[in-house]
Each structure stands twice: as structure tokens, then as C-alpha cells.
Image 1 (tube, rainbow, N blue to C red):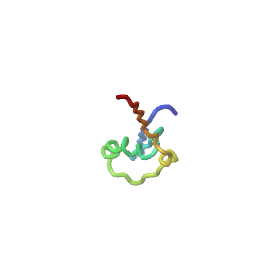
Image 2 (cartoon, helix red, strand yellow; image 1 turned 45 degrees about the vertical axis):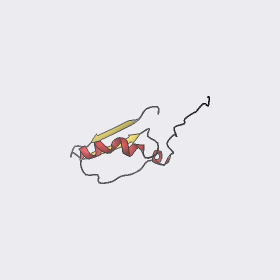
Image 3 (tube, rainbow, N blue to C red; image 1 turned 60 degrees about the horizontal axis):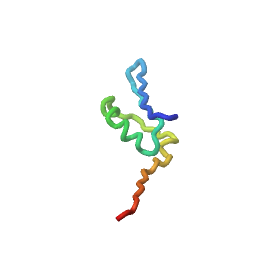
Image 4 (cartoon, one colour; image 1 turned 120 degrees about the horizontal axis):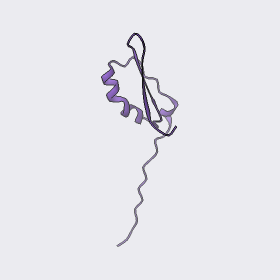
Length: 66
């Protein structure tokens, strides 16, 4: 999967389910926080296997030169 997706499903009774896809580590929680607040009370939080994957580290390359 190339992109990051936040999928919201609302059943006929008005219950909503939010699922993130394509996020590594805890970045999914950062991405979905505002939507969770807008939707109301969180009844359960079930991490996917992506939650346990390490998020890619940012690399910085410094070149010396005086």
C-alpha cells in the first residue's frame, strides 16, 4: 500500500468505526486524533500489525567543508 488512509464506517445505528491503513508505528494515532474527537467517545482501540512496525527514521546527511 503506497498511501495513508483513514477509513470511517458508520453503521445504520449511527455507530462509527475508524481504521487507519498505511501508517507505521504510533503515527496512526496522531493522524486520527482529531477525527476520534469529532466522532465522540472511543469505546475500543485495537492496534493493527502496522502499529508495531517501526516508523522510518529521518536521515540527515551533513557534508563537511570549511
